[in-house]
Picture 1 (cartoon, rainbow, N blue to C red):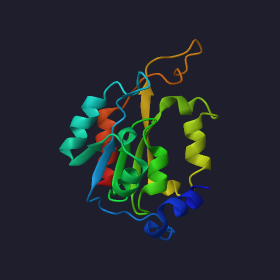
Picture 2 (picture 1 turned 180 degrees about the horizontal axis):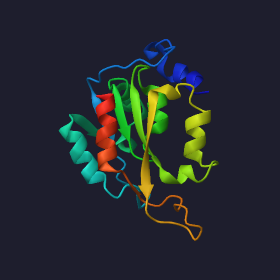
Picture 3 (picture 1 turned 90 degrees about the horizontal axis):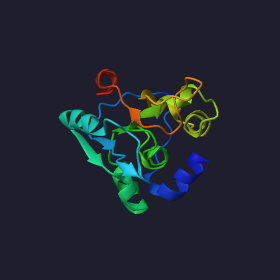
Length: 169
């Protein structure tokens, strides 16, 4: 369904699927800022993450403020995407070029809940999962059962983010 939607929305932008993962040195890098949406600040250390990524030459955009046409154009121009939990994962898979890579900071909750929508989307809906690297965004709030609380604020471990970036840049 992703490929059908991608084909319909992107038409001439479409590139043939890549049979095997190809490492492309990213020329343009972008962080898809989550910020506060629907009253939730999903990432407790987003300013620290942004400062780090700016040091690596990342552009910072707020995809929730862009029109679909703007996303289509903009996403096709970047080679490496870093996304906090819940930020433009779908748009990456629809609008990015096939050689682009996504470093997705996924909620820790997905490790404890096999039915979580993010986990399910990652593994069952994306035929090009090889273009995605996952980094666990820690969630400090826990339930009575000792598991991370769903939709609690996340914290991206900065040292792990740096290490992952060095494998992709």
